[in-house]
Length: 301
Image 1 (spheres, rainbow, N blue to C red):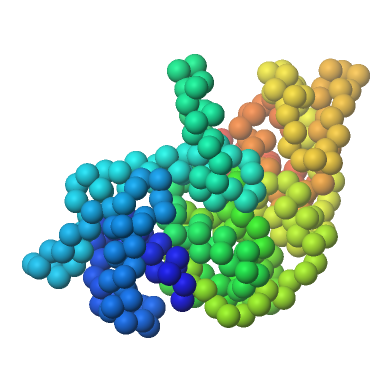
Image 2 (image 1 turned 120 degrees about the horizontal axis):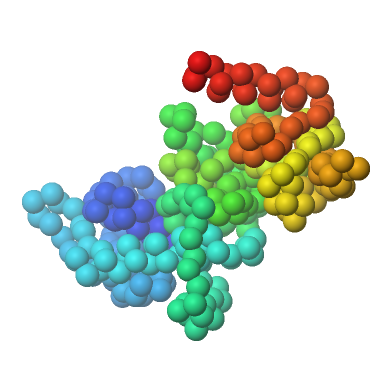
């Protein structure tokens, strides 16, 4: 296990629980107590984070280490700042400050209000461990909040979608199915020495370029949606999918055509436009839309 993994785990513990125990960390990573003390000293004397060196104190009552209030404040501010910076960024491989974005942004800060639509926080250590696995082409063991078990996956790409971070990966335990995981719902990532075997770049590109984030390996079908009124004026300037086609019909209706493999997200997006949107095809999606409308209307009958 690398020092980076151990240090980020210690930071996770400090941010999530407020403390950590030398013995617990040593047991987790199967290293000596002396090694974990060196890791602690590293954070106190040569912390690589922008928040600076951390003051870590020992509490004999709980036999654990914790941050001083000032260091805790700086670490919390760093976490919030880096999460926001990552959400702003559209660069695929920008983990934390690899360039002076803050200096560039600060000059305009008095004129700009940044408001996230639905940002989800996650542990910085999760991001760094996944990035390290990606760079080293290694599989990882991933624990998801919805299932209390470790899953062997091959990380392929970190995706910032709608200001929420996801991992596109091959789920080895599910026969090589390509899936997406929300970073905010990943509770732990453990490295392995197993190499990533996936090499089908074209398949990954199709997966990532498909509509929405809940994609799958199913064959895409053409979906057609009509928009009128206020929805028409909005949608005509939007890009829902890179291969979409938008035309205005003779009666003024705006027609959107695009390939879709998983319509879960598309259904909720169309419902947002109310009576100003109407799916036309495929028939299975039209039926799904109708059932959703009937169910909603039934709640007010």
